[in-house]
Amino acid sequence: MAIRSLTPMLSDFVTLRDAMDRLFEQSVVDPARLLSGTATGVGMPLEVCETGDDVVVKALVPGISPESLDVTYNQGVLTLHAKSEAPEAEKGWTWYVREIGYGEMTRSISLPVQIDVDHVETTFENGILTLRLPKAEAARPRQIKVGSNGQLKRLESAAREPVSA
Image 1 (cartoon, rainbow, N blue to C red):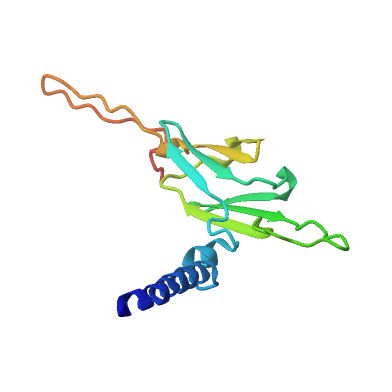
Image 2: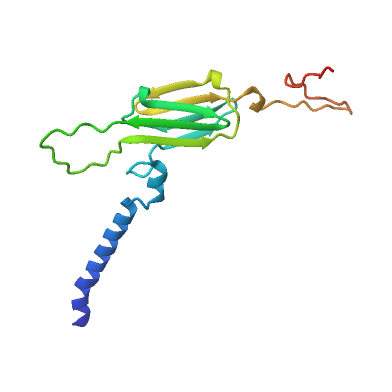
């Protein structure tokens, strides 16, 4: 009998524990929320990949207009900044669920190679910003010819010019 009387109490503890876990996950203490600056955890999910000639970055920015996006590249760091405004609440509105994050979001990532900022291509479609960042000429892969029969082959580079005194 004693075990049955504790069963409802134990289920209340589990419920209380779940409630505390949810409260903790949604609190300001959540590191993902602190870093992203939004209530939903990840403010601006990214995909970044490298091809032979480019670095391609895709950013998920639903509800953001292209005019509200700011993209900068400085010393190897790509920074994306977006801003959205919360809609004005009308008199008499009662919110039941409000999970859409409004405000400012910023993501900065270090790129593994230098890029040619003068030839960047951007597209914005269905809430996805795509950046095609061409690698700087010095960062692109190069073919090195291997000499045969004891011949010495040197890699010729336009970047290496003789220094005149």
